Structures are given as C-alpha cells and as structure tokens.
Image (cartoon, rainbow, N blue to C red):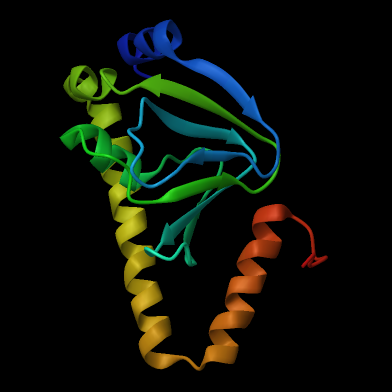
Length: 158
C-alpha cells in the first residue's frame, strides 16, 4: 500500500484486513467512526440522509481510496453525517483513527490524505456543474452508468 519503509511497517503493524458482503451498512449518521477504511477490492456507496430517512447518493469509494468525510470526522472527533453501504463484496484495510495524527510525520501519508481531499473536491465541483448545467435525464443516465461501473455489471436490479 505504501512505499516509505517506516510508514509501510507502521501500516502492517496496525492495519486489519476485513471483508463485508454486498449490502452491509458500515456506518449510519450519528455513529462515531472507530476505524478508517482503505478499499482493497469492491466498492462502498456513500449516502446522505435527511431527517425523514430519504437518501441521496454522494459518491463511491473505490479500490485504493478512502473516505474524505471519514478523514474529517476522525480528525475532529465528530460523528458521521453519512451512511455507507457496500455495493458488492468488499475487502478493506481498517486503520485505527489514532494513527491519523501519528502518521502526519510521513510525507507519503500526507500526500495520500491531500489527494483524497482533492479528488472529492473535484467530484463535488463536477456534481455542482451537473446540477447547474445538465437536465435531469442526463444526470440520471450518468448516475446509472456510475452504479453500473461500480458494480461492474450492466444489469439494473430494482
């Protein structure tokens, strides 16, 4: 996962490899995040819920990625504001939240965190552009394509 010898050793010491079946709810709004995921295989769907339980899709977390919102919640010790569900059978490294601060000494870790935030911010800007400049049918088609790509399956099951 990481190339810096000290970071690689620290990672191997604390990372727990876990596997979850498709449809597993990993976190609900209001829960505290105890471990930060880095996806190995599979996909996680990140959703936002309103007070009535209505959900809206935010983004997918794919192999090699982690959740920017998890990073934020962990660093400021606040509960999650999103719901996450495995889109398919998913394997991930789970890192204790305590290591986030300790690992700031490693440039490679800081770069990983910065690239995670940059990627999510770029996707946020793209979503704003889509809402502002695309019709609903275009946005729906893009969403269906994203779901299809995330599941690596062209069959839509309702």
